[in-house]
Amino acid sequence: KQEVTQIPAALSVPEGENLVLNCSFTDSAIYNLQWFRQDPGKGLTSLLLIQSSQREQTSGRLNASLDKSSGRSTLYIAASQPGDSATYLCAVLTMDSNYQLIWGAGTKLIIKP
Amino acid sequence: DAGITQSPRHKVTETGTPVTLRCHQTENHRYMYWYRQDPGHGLRLIHYSYGVKDTDKGEVSDGYSVSRSKTEDFLLTLESATSSQTSVYFCAISEGDQPQHFGDGTRLSIL
Image (tube, rainbow over all chains, first blue to last red; front, side, top):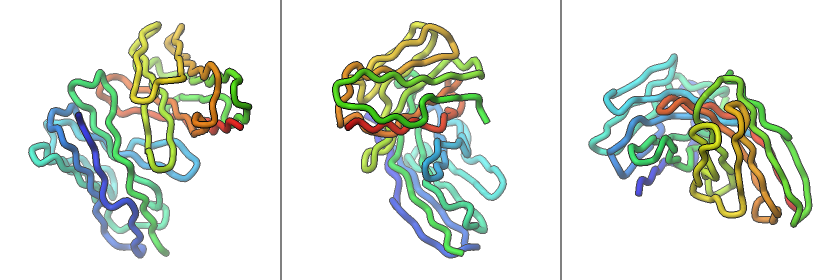
């Protein structure tokens, strides 16, 4: 059974720092891995989707990598800003799931001004 | 933003009453999902639909039923609400292996 783990559960850093969020999964038979952001009291917003054949995806200051063989993904945020404060979740779409996502518990990120 | 509307946004009701939550989409996406989100548990899938009248159970389906009579609407029903069903409920839509897009959620309190 696929399991997704995100470490750390919470992270607080000063504004301007580059930072890395981690996501690991136990079964490499995936269609893709997706990163989402959730602001307090809001729904989730899709940030990046990496197909299983890809190694990374970039959007602005965000870069997500995927190492399927080791079951790991990282979300790199460059030059962090207070507006980046949110909970970041990763999820994998596994090949036996009929397009159901398997979710990590999230990393709560606080960027201090 | 993807056209997803959840209603109601907030509801307070009593134990034992029936509750129906509605998810409406304007994107014509095939897949629709209902999740609940609770502290300490993250997002958990309740039910999902892969087409009109085609639905299946998720991880935490006990006590919930769903219906999808039209592409654009996916209803979640709590037949007899219990306090353990107090939660924030999210609807999401997708086209197969494409990103899921989420509604703003319904905050449900069962007293």
